[in-house]
Length: 139
Image (tube, rainbow, N blue to C red; front, side, top):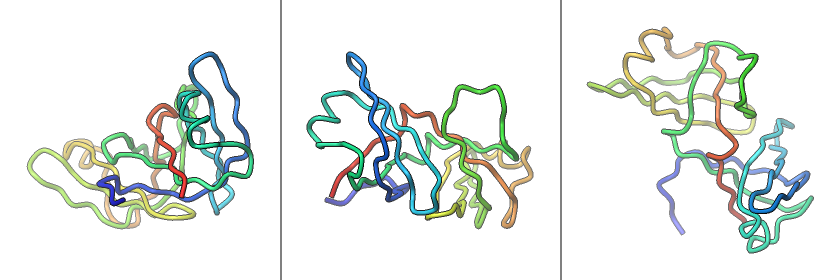
């Protein structure tokens, strides 16, 4: 299956904490960084997720926010440090490619935000991704 989702990071499930409807799934990337994905309990069952499961964390580029440094006092669980490798700016939007340990992320942000943050190749950034915006796929 081919997907339009550019952000696909391989990892291994380290834990699954289930609730009534939703589950928090912790995924360790090859770099050692841990992500949290909030998925339905049904998805956990259907995918057969448990500690040790190999998965891909999938994130649409429109769901990746960027900051120029770590952000404290925020409910967003996933803060991934990286370095900007490319900024492609159009009339309203910018596509920002960020190299992170274990892969590359693309963020679709407004052109104004890219300008305000002074983003350019070599800029250090932190990618911010809500756990509810991470989907998981198995092989």
